[in-house]
Image 1 (spheres, rainbow, N blue to C red):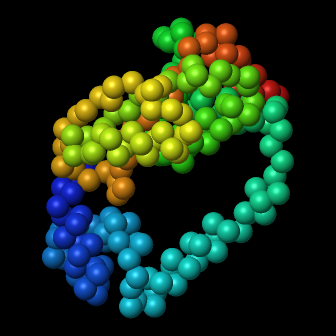
Image 2 (image 1 turned 45 degrees about the vertical axis):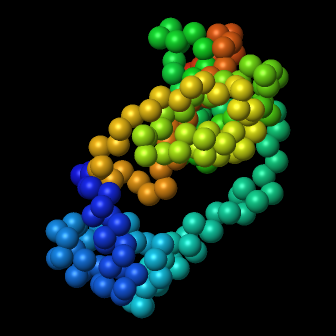
Length: 202
């Protein structure tokens, strides 16, 4: 997937709000139609086809909501969810000796920590958070956002790592990358053992 300058994204969004069609935006800015559509999908359109496609997406996403609406997540199921999420996005032993789960999707980080709390007896004051932010972010605002989201006090946050953005668009509403750290090698091995057990299940 190619990355594009953020200024191009903003220009396209401004033009879309004026009613410019996706086809015309593609021709004017030289950005593929599928990419333009992804950038402006939240902007209301006069196009019946565009609106119909968005409504269809909403309906398809809602089709299986009933599976989670009344889902009871007990301690054991929470442990399974933690292990699967960690399998995807966690740092593994022996390269690390502590839990380190990292992602830029704030919803994913939030649900990982919620399941970790529910499934395991962890000490709240030992949860540490490290943020990687862009120099264009407000460190104070972003740290407060993550603190409120995760219900972790500000004094348990490390000093954030600050990087300069490349000006290449990756996603809208980027709030930095968050790493949850918890220094317990035994718990790390427990979690890894869970997903290894699942992978070996016949």
